[in-house]
Length: 460
Image (cartoon, rainbow, N blue to C red):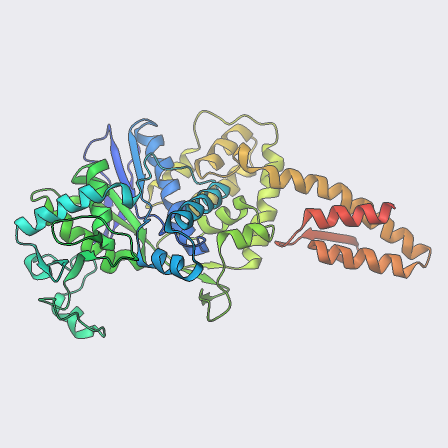
């Protein structure tokens, strides 16, 4: 059997992965808070876990892996969005869940086996909070329930921080009803304008951290194999999950392996609205960047390294995928991927190494093996190829338009030639006149509809 090694945040080293039960490998990924479109950084852990699930199913069997990714549909950000827009919370969350599914589907990410919504697990959250109070790990104060951080000596182990250091570095106003500045909310009261559920302490709603502990326990058990998310969730969210889960289920280990992906940059800079380089997955898709291209670029960097999204990388990825799809046309995949690709992925999900192995396979004669290996990474899947087929149709139109431009130049109809040139630019077709002839390339902003309109105009 293939030996998988993963870098465990908890142990801070690359460990051999040994599932608790090889017949049911269980993993949990923190999913979206559904109040707005998913930005590009939100897609990175989804793609990392998508590849991880593919690897685990290849090694342990398709029916021996259980993948859970939650949806946070009760949160103050959602409440604020509802108040600002005058729309109902339910309307916002339903719309946003639909957006999220559409966008992740476009990236070729398979849906998880279970996608629990926080609002469906309030009863389990209340029961877990009651257990924490009974074991003196939580206390009630002014309608709130707070976790007593000092009651769990291992608090800070996951993130490598001490409680005293965290307090010293904190610059937040501490609620007067907290016993300790680091204590965190498990339950908080709701006013008449906020969503709320009855509880022994107040009509209220859960804190953010308790939901993942309750849902993972309900669907995967108090001990399971892998938990993951972006490095920004390591503290406080995942640290708090560990504390409340281990205290609610004494003797259980909660997650055995923790995987955290690094953050995303855009053109070498942190993505932020203030820098004007913040964009969503949908923004890219609507600009004409294919989901498969986004996936390729994201997987080209190891998940534990910062990933830099650039237009150059997107253009290069599109060119590679067009060539690969040409090689794969009409080819049925082999029964298994190449060992070189599996070995790269088994080495701490080295997707960059796996893509390097694909480049080598593309130069060999075994096309079925190449296709099967690419599909191990979710690339060259049949359902993802519509963009390349559209490109083939675009090629015929571009060649015809270039011929029309050449003819216009011969006839000294420079107005017509310039109109075709400007139309190419508007459609996202980069045309270069070189000494060796005319060269062209589709840019990430290619618009097939604009190109088709240009073709009709020229024919008229």
